[in-house]
Image (tube, rainbow, N blue to C red; front, top):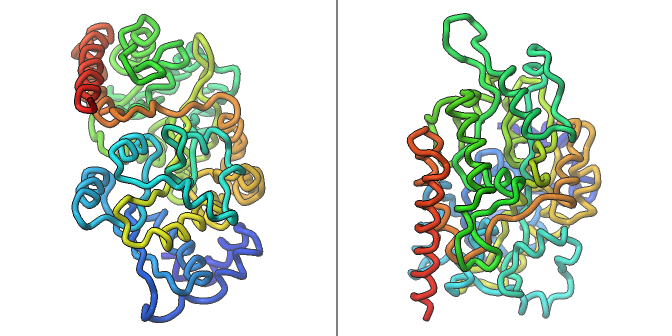
Length: 440
């Protein structure tokens, strides 16, 4: 709604810097005669649609011969539908792609390497990206995507709930023991009806929500070469047991209901003041800023027995092999992955991610004291010191589906971590074996 109110738009644009104000001061050119239409697939939320519309307006002002047309696909249907489009004759000219999907798409020759574009076009570079982010957007030594933005997972918490329970705010001294103790105090029956209505924490069933616990205990799911499973190790089993016990023994998490692709039910609990802590990416800041009245902040994830780790995640933009307008698509990729685009998607005012360009991330575009959270620097500290990307195997999607299916038995208390890991060990090794056989 505020996208159509001039006064609000002006306030938002101030945070983007004066160079963007001048770009956005004029409207989109009328009509589409003589323009090349570049189609782009996305799973954008409503908030991201506001950001992207401002970005497209700026891009089309600079490139009057190109018109961007978004193809919106729901998150749950995105990758199957994109694969179908690419396999047929309906490939988009460009597409958003989570970095952990790059090996699968690149390995199947579904997307183009960007190296030829980068070699010819010296006006754009990814050398000013955070090194790990640049690395994540490549596969087998070739660049396949520019960054839309990136995120790290951190601990978001309700300060008012901590105050009422007499619990100190989380900080760098927190380990698993301190975390569990806080969870036990924060989980309460606030109205005395015999049922818990305030929970301390919730862990989503997605890999990026629990893998960092495994890493912090010295475990993993697959080896570094993506050749075999390592999930049936004492370190991994112990970490998963800790999470399972938080839910099923300590009962500090809500029961397993409402799981969906976006985790909206659990995020809603945090927004509405019924959840004390939630580990997620920086996109949660936009949700809390726009929809929540709670007093909130962000802290590092609790450190584990072996180390402190968290997840580094990036969304990139790629060019499918069957793109009908690859050069025009490249112009849009440069804009999204360059200073202008990073200043939109990484804006503290209207963005939902962290700019991949380090200097912009450290500037007031992202580190803007006018916007929550107070300890925003935690995210940049994690990006440079202890955040790690997920597995980048060609088989990642199939492995993650298997993990979700079998770990549900742990989350619901039907099977212990040790039994689930034995099953998953066989499943994952079978996936690797069949994948290797299909490529021979």
